[in-house]
Image (cartoon, rainbow, N blue to C red):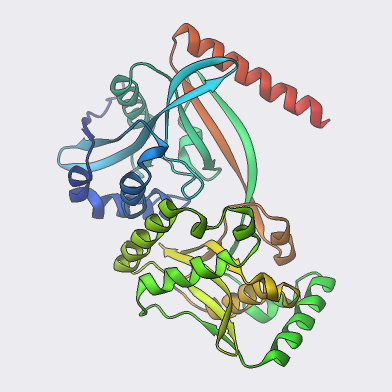
Length: 363
């Protein structure tokens, strides 16, 4: 009989409790296939501190082998309503600013550790009817560690990114002909407006850098729609704190485009374990015809050309304009893991039926 490893579980429920494990937590995240900074202690401790109205309660369930931290399951408890029923669910942290959070598992540990963490979550919140991993990356090991469990896996969307394995000249020559022509025209128009400069200063004050992103995004359609960071005091506080913490780790990569010393496009980038995540893009709507967002992406790709510290440029999300850049796509999924409670069985059956109906309607 194969020996099952023994794990010790600690349930941490305060910022002070999780702080001592920050370094190891971030290290484990960097070793995962999807290398997502949104799963790091740096990001999630900020989420737990500033997004308290998004959940009833939070816990970080940690698994140790001896004194070594080998597994982390950060969870929130939320009220849910589906199929006419009210109940509680355990979810991994999620809101408009935080997504695709996954279990963090040391690479040499497999299904046994996943099982231990799942069971610990349900012991912590026994009234919850399922554990919801929301929009997790198709590269995640979690998707392969669920045999024997009552679960439902649902495709959500594809997310974009590109390997930094091509020089910029080759990358641009491979762009669609019409897009490349329009990009060149936009650049010519932009340069006629005045000197055009790309800036990415990693030594600048992180609060000032983040405020550039917030102010520029507010001038885009997001400001009019009410979805910009500046439209939510909670999100402004969250990003101000987050920017300082990312900068302290050396991860913050705010970059922007200015013409005549006026900033017309800006992006919040995060460099984590070689993965450059482009997280918040904004541009001045008054300059929309000059394609400021497109020019900013072009300048960024020039900047990372040959940079050995950047192995991938990632966007994770799905927007129509990404196809212009010959992005590589990967799937993202919702994963539901249910208990054997009668209500859980009903919810699982209804979720499976919903997915089947969606597939039939797409035929």
